[in-house]
Length: 245
Image 1 (cartoon, one colour):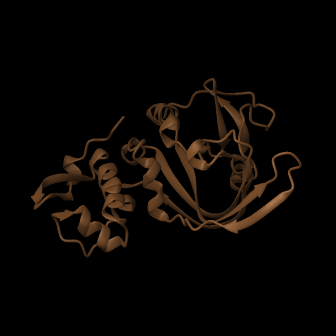
Image 2: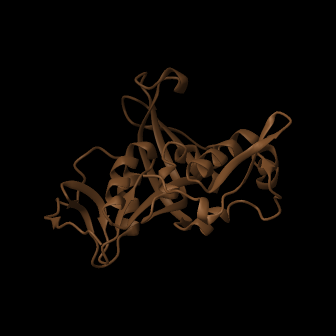
Image 3: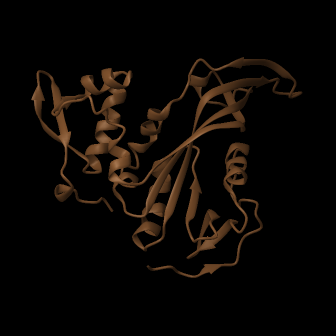
């Protein structure tokens, strides 16, 4: 296995701006003997395990992380991508001048396991690449905003000042073909449509289409025809699978 030398670590504080959630998750994941913010072949890695596994925590925008992860995986490193999803999220709003807490409420939006695919559509190569594990953490979190007018118009000028971890509720990891395919209900008979998948999973068809897009890009499923206005899909045999790079 190609394992380049790991250079001297940084100070343990990341060199780029991050919300508290990112740092808290790194601390949560760290075990004795692991190293935070280590340089590997000139790139800063969130966590280097004592056994050599590289761990990257990404709270959003998986597509931005893809080139780095796939490069390491292609060189023989074992890489774990950890992605948190807020199953329950508390929203706090601060007064923009005094930072006084104005309101606290629970977000009506609740993430689930399939929320992973909202981001994975920008990095489907993670599902196909050898040496890459994707770990999803279901969490309780706090998001703090201030309405100072500097935020985007669709957020009514609210600016997010921090995201914090309250609790890790559960974890699930995916690395092998079988682990990914286990997300497709066995009750589905091939070929099936996005509508059938959505009904089986209890999610809207448009969310099911994101899942199917990722599975097709990873050569785990393939389009097989049409059923009315819907495309149909079926599993790809192991022999027919080609890994993405």
